[in-house]
Length: 352
Image (cartoon, rainbow, N blue to C red; front, side, top):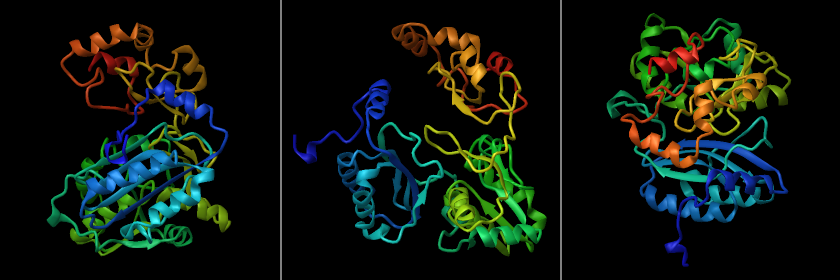
C-alpha cells in the first residue's frame, strides 16, 4: 500500500496496544510542546506528521489548528534525535521549546492520535476578546518564586480535578470542569486587582497564553505567566536547587494522570477517605468516571467507582454494548467526567 493511501489512524484495540507496549525493550521519553502560529494547511501537516511519527513508533495526542499546535508525545529513546529533527524541520516549529516529563520512563500513551481542531485549546472566546501576540511576561522558576515571596496574586488556570491533587501555595483555583468556563470566572474573581501583579500557571503554559492575553484585554496591567508551566518549573527547581513552592502532584493528560512534584499528598480517596492522590478512570467503560482511588479500594472495587459498576464491568462485552445502545444520553455519568471532593460517588450515580 502506498504512503498516500496509508490508513492514518490507530488500528489496534487497547489490550493489543498494552501488550505491544509491554514488549518494548527500550525506554520512552514523554514530552509536550505548543505554539500559537499560523498553519496554512492543518490537514496536510497532520498527514505528514502521522506518517513520519508512526514510522518512529511515536505515540501521543496532538491537536493542530490554523492557530497552532498543542502536542504531548511519547518517543522511543533510540528515536529521540529523529523525533526532534522531524519537529524542527517544520519551519513554524523550528524554535519551539520542549517540556520533558518529570517522571520520564513511565508509560504515558498507548497510541498515536493527531486531530485537526478549530482551536488548540477550546476556550469559547471570540477573536476580539484576545490577541495571542500580546501576552503576559514569561517568568523563570526563580523569578516566579521571587514574585510569590513579594505577595503577588497567584492564579491556577486549570480545572478542579487538576488543582485538587496539587497547586502552588496560596493559589486561587476555581471549581470548574473546563477551561471554557474558567476565563470569565477568573476575571470576576480578581476584578479589583487590575493594578496588582498577577501570576498565572498551568500544566505546560498553553492555557496561560490565552488567559494572560484575555486579562490584558480586560484591563489588567501586570500579568505574568510561569514559563513552561508546572512541568518546566519542576525541572528548573531541581537543576538550580531552588525552593519548591508547588505542593503535591501535577495532573497530566496521559495514562499516568499525574507526576509527583513534592512528597505532599493533599487529597483523599473518594471511596474510603484515606490520603490519596492517585487518579483512575472507572473500569466500567460506560462510566469512565475520573476519581481518586487508593490501592486498597482499587482491589476491593476492581478499579471501579461503585460495586454496581464493578458488576457491570464483568458482563460480556456484547451485553455491555447493547446497554450502551439502549440509553439516551452520552454516558451514565452524563457530561461530568470527574467528581468533586465533597461528593459521594454512590449518591452521585443515583442523581445522574
